[in-house]
Amino acid sequence: MRVKVWGCRGSVPCPGLNTVKYGGNTSCYEVLTGDGRHFVLDGGTGIWPLGRALAALGTGQRITVLFNHTHWDHIAGFAFFEPLFVAGNRIDAYGPFNLVDQGKSFERTMQVQWDRQFYPHRFTGIAALLEYHEMREGVTDFGGVTVRSHFMNHSIQALGYRVSVGGKSLFYTGDTEPYRNPWADGEAGSGAKASPAAETTSSGLWDDDDHFGEQAGAIIEMRNNQIVELCRDVDLLICDAQYTAEEYRTKVGWGHTSIPDAVDMGVKAGARRIGLSHHEPLHDDARLDALEAWARDYARGKGFTGEVFMTREGQEVTL
Ligand SMILES: [Zn+2]
Ligand SMILES: [Zn+2]
Image (tube, rainbow, N blue to C red; front, top):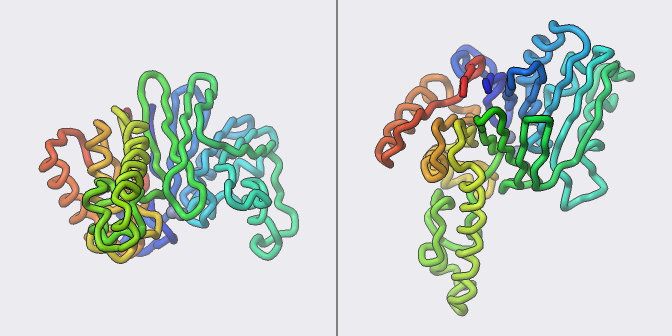
């Protein structure tokens, strides 16, 4: 299995002279399984250059796109994905089932992109066979490529995917934040390590009933551990690591993970490689270089012997 990074920026594209090394395109990763099929994780602006490369292969392409969720930075390139405009291609788009507002299906949310208010032509020009599929938690077999989907912790339903083929596997978190007790006064950034003792002080809500507080802590820990187990022994963990620990203190509840929490997750799971991703747009190349060095030191300090790196556009990783 090979993975190619086409976009690894979070929130908003940020092309420019200071982001040339890591790139300015938003989330898109290609998974090459070696049998001619194309699996894609997310359709941020990075899917536009990927689409150009796939369109050059001609008609008859079979492409599966697994969307983490439908925030702009994960879908913004899809309306301009060139294989959609080639007759004879088949594109299957998978995304999370909407638990909260069931009137807004995945298909409806995606199709809005071609409304005239957002798209430059009244006809979409889609010539390929395009099918939408709503996913929940579970295991889907794509003929030898197994995908396990799991709801992550974000402001809307977002699916993390474990993709396994030929004895190799990766886990893609997409956007996620460690579960934590939002009413506790615990130290921000400790989400991945939430414990009842540390998290049940001084909010008042929990003081009256220690047992309830303990239960809440246990549930939080269970949800975080479930995700760690889904990543168990993966060859590559591509993890949301948008913020530094300091930045995260003012971004608790925004749905993203700090760099140390992302490394902790990979270390706990026994991942062989940890690819830190969904880079904060304010972090230019020099900052990301420095943060990568910091993350490697931090991981070594935890006894981690695998690779830790900041994902960058154009990078290919062979598993
Ligand atoms: Zn995002
Ligand atoms: Zn998001």
